[in-house]
Image 1 (cartoon, rainbow, N blue to C red):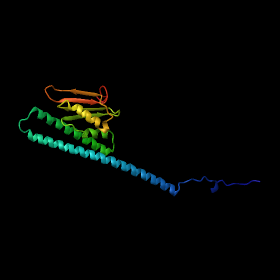
Image 2 (image 1 turned 90 degrees about the horizontal axis):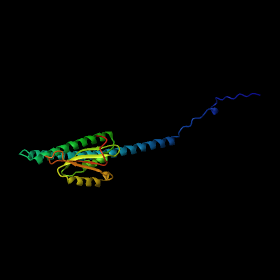
Image 3 (image 1 turned 90 degrees about the vertical axis):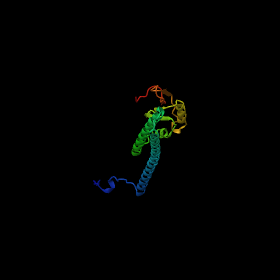
Length: 201
């Protein structure tokens, strides 16, 4: 006795399981919450960077006003020391302007990178001491270059660096002082948190 079975009947077909409406709603809700959190974090980061950029702009404007005031004062015969101070102020303005440009790029890219380090160095101010360059790399190596008219200000600046939370773990192992021109009062200094010459030279 033979019996034929139709294997194409619906009962023999593989049934595809689909998500229920409740499950789909939960997935969509979780994704929405995640996106909101990401957008909130990006907005918070962007706000902080904008505030720092505004602070740098204020410092930049203040330095420009100082240069303008000195320029008006120095229309009469000036001394070599005042000429040197104007040169240092101009160098500081260019440095702050460069920092503003870098922060502008960070705001556009929404990247933090070395944001805390640059912000701390930009806000730290020791009258009579000027920064001329800062170098950092991915291995947390830091080099700070600057100049001053008084060598005693360098230890004071080092102490202020150690008091900053963002740089408290950075121990500057190398401190170099040199007078590029014995005829000039300017003293150059280099601070490094590592021994030897930097790899980026």
